[in-house]
Amino acid sequence: MTTVATTVAPPGEKKARRGPAPKSDHPEVVKGGLSEIPANFDVSKHKAPTVDAWASDVLFFRWKAESCDAKAIKYREMADHAEKFGSKKQQTKATRLVKMQETMAELTKQLEAAGVDVPALLAAD
Image (cartoon, rainbow, N blue to C red; front, top):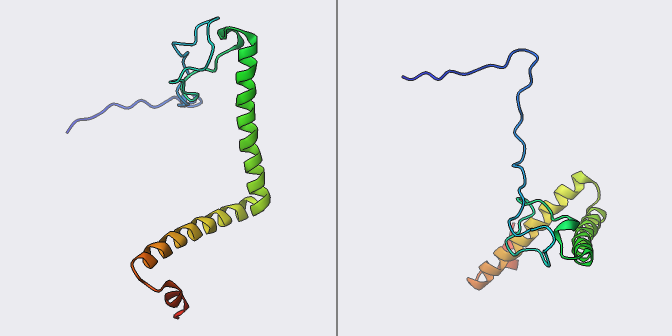
């Protein structure tokens, strides 16, 4: 049997928390030469290019505007969803109901394709 030594932090000292991995600079984001976002650029891994990384300010502001438009569309969809389903508690239940209905429709298709009379099956108690 092997023993492993563990260290305990002294009282009053806080443990270091693990956060998300730090973002790195993308190798293609070179100061002064960017004309478009690289194909392998990942927002979760790379730092966003600053205005200095672009070939011109116009390109940066167009890219930033497109990014903001995408976020605005997402937030409008979230607002519509919240308006449609009500409070957070109701939204959770309504979302589950919608997923169940989609599953029910898929199962109905599968049963009808197999030759089962689904309306008669559902009507029977």
